[in-house]
Every structure is written in structure tokens, then in C-alpha cells.
Length: 119
Image (cartoon, rainbow, N blue to C red; front, side, top):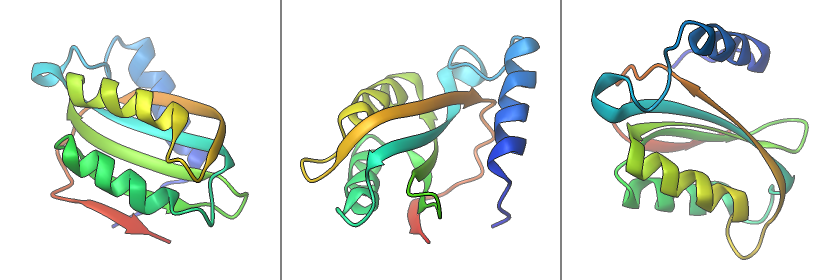
């Protein structure tokens, strides 16, 4: 799976928003959520809880620890599942302390089959 730099992903999200694309209203109510989670989110099981929550909501994608101490999440699915997942990300699992979450929507591409824990 090819990784994109965080700046490239955010730039793409801005372009899609400026074109009126990349929201959950597109593609039959499906979209891709790209989120960067800040706080005490590494070393507390955050990625594994994230996979469990995403899978329970029928979402696909991946979660990864970043060198700067954040957790990067990319997931795809229907709007109801993504909204519930967004709310969960704001709180995180009991062992974590989430200070803020940067959330950006991108156009749904349907490229993930499962939800994986990476890095």
C-alpha cells in the first residue's frame, strides 16, 4: 500500500472540498475520513481499539503511529458509520487522552477491504 505524506493528503482534501466533492453526500453516502489524533495516543492500545471500533461499524482502512506522537487514521464507509467513528475518535479508548483531532473528508474510492493496524 502506497503511503502519502500528510501534507499531500490534506492538500487533496482541500481540493476536493473546493470542488464540492469528498463529503459523505457523494458516492451513495460514502466517503473517506482522514484523521490525525493528538494527545496521549501512543503506547495505550489506541490503534487496536481503533481497529475494533472501525470494524464494528463496517468501516475499512488503516491506523498508524506517526513519529511525532500522533496517530493517523484513514477509513472509508457510509456516513452513519463515519459520524459515529468521528465521535469515538474525539474520546478515544479509556487508556488514551485525546487533546484534538484533525478531520478531513476525501472522495470515497473503495480501495480498502479490511481495517488494518500498521506501523
